Image (cartoon, rainbow, N blue to C red; front, side, top):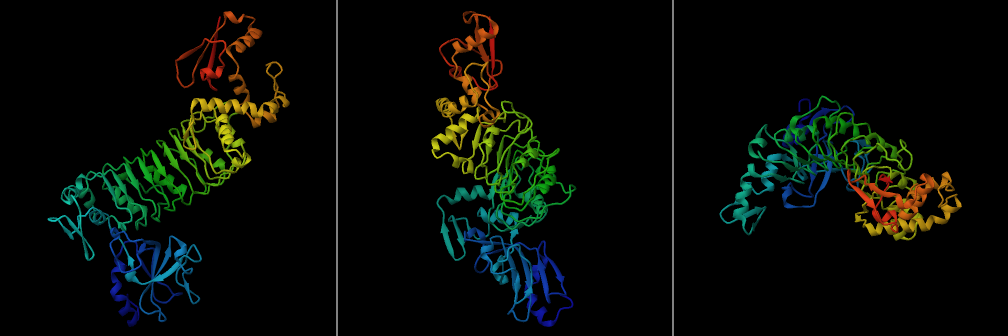
Length: 523
């Protein structure tokens, strides 16, 4: 406070502790008289500071400014709200810009006594699990402010919670955690933690997260969503605290994909990564990182271009991809033609593309190229508006994707698939004939336009043929009587298992033959 006038010193003196808080910087600026504190996360609870465990409804702010001006009475803090609807201005007052906001109405001025500047991790754990000094152990009561609350069976619960080193799952969501605390105190007190929920706290940097994680030897699950954080900008920032981490949630943290890849160098066995509602607009190839990933959630990030998917298509173990509300309008796998399986997403079983801008059925056709796709969520896309009957819409999707087993969270039963494929052939049978289709293989020459719109139609026609008709076609090709032919097939799903096609009156579909299966002919 050197160089300040006596009035400023006298007003600021009660708030000297603010200058000692982690992440606070004090600077003199010639443009704005007085002292400025910046980049400090805080919480406004609508009254005097209270413990967050009281369950009061909270509003959150991402940064804090301290400024003394003659026309203000006392000290005011400038905040930028995470929810801009809580604000009133852009950080300016009477033409003077005290701080900047990303939203023109995202800022406010509040009194310091209405702000909570956070606690260390272990303090939050003790408060959350009833291990603070205000607990009455004899009668099983807990004091909240001026009220005493009695809990049934409190003795046994308190005994279990008292032993912090036995806790495996810990949640301190919305408990105003802002820093790790003293070095090694977490590892001494909570040696067996494996799952931590740190969401919606006051954590302002990834460094704070690593400081906590580095003290948890067997950390497997970590949720730090809804914390506006700064992330490392170079690859030199790594930590061994995530060596066993399998599930990580970073929703609403303002992380970019570039920052994800930098941090991912410290996540060697990560299996599930949740990145919903962030600043991710462009993807990059994850070379040598995220190779163990099985689930990736990119929902509510405006990727816009469906071709961004190609940049993550080589993740070898990715089984579930969530792209809900990402703004994509089309999907393409140009490396192979229809009827073949793409080399992209080799392990992808579950895909969510609902709430997007996909308007053409060609994108649904493309999904049949995915070799392992079993479950799809695609509701709330414009292409669905082309079909007024919702039952017919479902049938069309089922018929177009041969291996699909679950659609929009509903299981597809074998009878439902048979009915869908049969109706599909009926609906477009006339178009197929007009486009040059014919039951005689020698005359069957449908147009390229029809095949592009209905790439599975030919295969579905073949599935409807009886074994007797198949033998008739083979007779034309091989000149061997049908009575001497023995047919069977090997399923692409059941390697090494051969199924005999022994009933001439049954269609191929009766035996559940699918695209990719191999029909064997013996005589």
